[in-house]
Image (cartoon, rainbow, N blue to C red; front, side, top):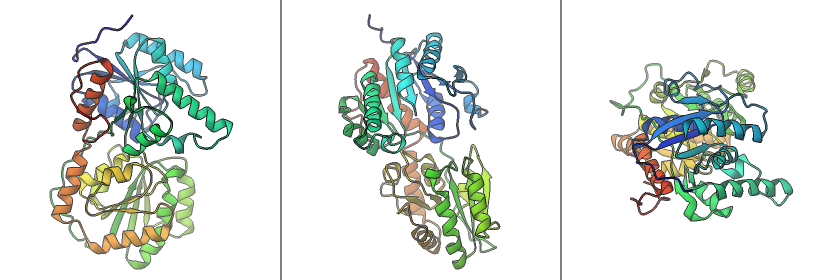
Length: 383
């Protein structure tokens, strides 16, 4: 029996996350669940843990399905299906892990959309001709067949989907939507102490390559006094602190830990830097643009180029060279602060990814899945 199409004001959406870790996907889900103008949204988390657990945005929207760490896919599927039975959503949106939520939604006869946040080529073993790669590709294709739609946060991720044989009829572009800080009131003034400040924001995990940024600080300090603030937490913190100590940079590098809102740190910096091996989107890049802070970001698949587009004053750099990174940061510092035109252009680009703009596209995708008339010509173009 086909499901009756709900009225827009009555439709329920369930977002499914593994946990409330402080990553960009988790923040994007909370933002969108709160901002969707024509749907009632609930966020389901499989494991009640993470930096965002006490976040105000999570307080009223999270339903915990049970502790699932170490449990089988079958057990996880049944737990999510049980939660879906209580909520009775019209659509399930999975993030980070598509297979289990998609299977759970199938059990309850609910359409599913997977919101792809990171390259499958980097997060799963999809490349190669061996049995593991074939199994991963088969799993992704199975998820795609059962999904009503795959929405990706950047165009490059759509290309990966096409390469895996997922048809365009199932693809859409849905960037992460952000709660943007207010525009900067005035340009950054010169510092009395002559010190230049750099900030980076991201989990302290190997793909984020904080080690390269730390290595570049020795070159930077030989040229001019520079302080680096590292915002984030993660598995590599102890090793990174040890490297800072070995380089004698304790007075130049500070670890600020996880911050739910790093706006103050980004706005007060002379340069925002993000070094990473891959980035499906890159929420903090948008936040830096919104703050009017000059940006230096590694040129990796796929988010940085999509976000920065032709933004003046933003620089893409190789992701594997501490020397080139140091040279690029120095060139940015020598240039001085952004001009008014550069700040306005950066802010305009950031506003293209505001949660309000993304929420409107999301509602259009929900309309498409639930059978309402299409209001936009292309679902794979932005904006």
